[in-house]
Length: 525
Image: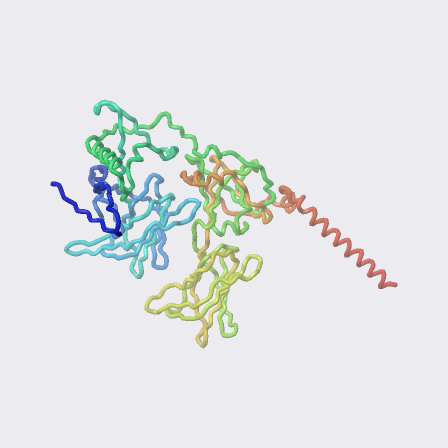
């Protein structure tokens, strides 16, 4: 029924105002229709509070497990994510009855490193009514791998653990010309070759919570009503005979300039497996690149004719653990000094973990490192603290450094030196993304005077890393039998750039010889 509104306007003394009033209303538009729920599908994605609000149908997709590791009361799981699958949440399936564990999810983005996606505390408590929350809401993932970190505390790892992705099933709204029973269209999808479309119809759908004027709101409501009134029937899925299956990176799959293999001290044989898009990923373990420069600027991938093949490099893309040998302690002025050496040196490390032989530790420490050239690098200082009621390995985190050994100094006071049962360092590993056809290649490294490569591929980094990468089989690192100092000097323009230095040294040597002869002659006289 009509509602009367009284408006009173108060202001300063003067003439009366003659305002014109417009009546506007605001209301929430009903969302576009969701797909009907299917058997075996969950009701919705979790919200920030861990609840399951109503919404579109949710598909449960099991994720392939690539690796699993249990260490220091944590379970670390690496999962494969199909590029077309963007989970709204992850759900844990486990045979453990009652549990309460913090969980963190990381996105392993190719060429960008790990990015946090979400965290939650999953739980289950059985009783007359089982209370549980096993979902972790996550942001949109971009990488092809997910890393799950579960804090087990002092409890055993979750039994029979599996992880599945919860994905909201998408809804396509489109307009077809013709009668409802005669309209035909072809739905094309897959391949990963097309860019995101920009249709007029998509522009009519507002962002959640956006305010619309009356005309646009009417258009959106009409679109929603039309979508509710008709639905399309999908035919059988079949392959597209016109699909171009050539590698997506075919434009970059060409050899570059030739180099002199003899300029590099070490090499690794590579076998590139067939890849649909022409991209292959090789993880460079820290121990495998000890002969390379710290910035890996002297790494080259070449074919049998010594021509380079372009690649992208992601430094510190992953990490691993290396057991350290322990020497000492050596007593110095009331302090105990331990020398810790990695299995191969130098290595890029950013964390030291110690397992003491006593359940209680509270001592000042200083940690220093020694670089490959012998220079000392201060890493960290403070107190090592361990309480008997909660024994845990001692951890020291510091800035990433390339070191050949570490030196830990503890202030013992009047206590006996600390017994260290084991020590390990977290090593940083890089990944190399090679654009090359399947075949045999050689990875060359170990030229300290080499300049960093410049490939056009770097300008389309996002395009390259958006496609799926294949596998690379790599042999062990070995010395390059073709290496020679002459080849290293002759590589590129190094010989020409070395001529001025050689000339200077030659003049200095001649001057020293002449001065020596003059001095000897004067002495005889």
